[in-house]
Image (cartoon, rainbow, N blue to C red; front, side):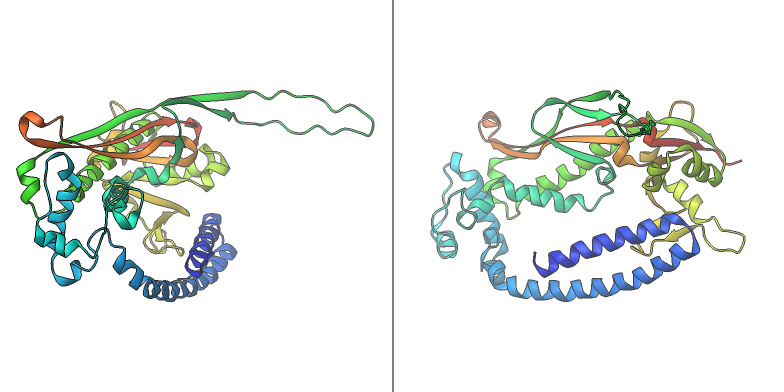
Length: 388
């Protein structure tokens, strides 16, 4: 394991330790969390130094391994490079050839083009686009990050599970028979759904354009993919047991009594922008805010030691059951225990010139395959808060 990876693992583990201490909500645990937070700052500084050294070592290699740009980008020929890229990617079915000038620019960058070698053209194929899509996705609130994503190898299948176990072991004496008990397994079925988008692009446009078209396709797909996944996850949360609430004390009661203690310890509070604003204005008797910053991550707000996330009021309204549209939703629970997102092979990007032949166009198709299902309904609750 290299230095950067080792420090990344240590930082992650230390953040988890601090988060665990914060959930205990007692003075001794808080003191330990403060001490570990100081250690975390030192680790982060060590990481920055190691990362800078690694980046410097990789600079020479990276300059020669850019997708197809090579040294051309550094000489101010970005438009020429994008034009070459479009001709190589889309020209096979259209008889497009590089001009003598383009060949000269490209001659020393790639000799022969193959898909199985990244340095010889592999960076042109859809594998690169997967990375582009993931990069764009980081610009949006992704609820898939708080649920359990399960990669699957087939369109349909089952996942075995064991229900709640309240039994205990039986005490026995020597040479006596140990009592027998039964164990029942359940199973969850999944059936992957297909989601996609098709964008027709005029061939004449592709031949002349100076922009990397596939990056624009990735950006559009990223927005739609996040929106679709968020809608499906919120729809599952809408199916949770709904409880009327009138103040933040109902959230505390849900964490302390309603949810199982193991679930409560790993819970997240998901609410609307209005709900977040309500929590942010709460203060204790001494004027201290009840919504605090995590010592492990100052950008993460926490309430009673649990992470608080929020989405827009419009998006959060999808959680509310019929008749409760005016309430502020507070979904409370361990969503990794409650919800499964079955993902089949991630993303597909394909190109067809035949489908758009009569329109003199090429079709760019993007697709992802997944299904969202509730796995443990008791691991979450939906509080519909109407302030008294």
